[in-house]
Length: 311
Image 1 (cartoon, rainbow, N blue to C red):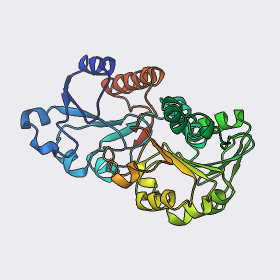
Image 2: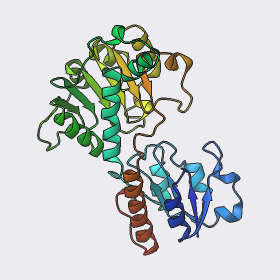
Image 3: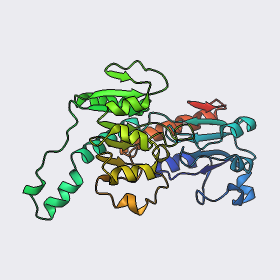
Image 4: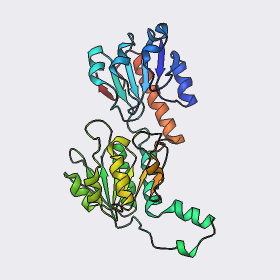
């Protein structure tokens, strides 16, 4: 069989897939699968993708032998689940494989933007010292608001509690997590928070949840961190909020239209950007490889893969 990959894979994952079939790399996210060689398309039974890239109904229609779609990571918002159901295609994901790495990165961004670490580093290298030694906000005894409280959100909460932070979270329903308070109203949570961390999936339901009104609720002493999906934050509203002092600062591992950041966004001094790598670490890659192996083994044995999203 053939295995089609829509996302870059580390060499160990590629080699593992190659043991089970001919691995074909997608020529580009904007390229319809129908443009691939018809003979290759006829052999594709598994597509490896992620939530950001997904798999459309048209692309599924061009793969007559398709049986499985595997999303690396927890996201699956851009996979057409209706089309998958109609075709009998099983869609699964690998939640939790990189949760700890993402949570570590979220806390690193939170500390870096609130303590202004990048500007301080650049200033010291430029020979400045005394004028940089001004008080900066520290997270202890401050309030963290989490938008999303899945495995990643809960891992961030655990770390925040270790910093003696108060932890609030907004999710569809309360979770049995000691030390964190569920807040049903997102605006009310933002009003109480000193730090707002986006840790929810993308998709139509969460698009632009963080808008101008929510940023005003976060306020001029507040910081925004996004390690979820770029679509959750209204970029135009965020740029205006950072330029006008509506919030104190932001740190984004994801943003709308990535990898191309708008010039006004790149020019902001109270913003930190990283290239959508919050979930990448040797530990996360090993966990992802293990999850991928479990999925492939189930598929090869004719079983349903773990963590079915839709069947």
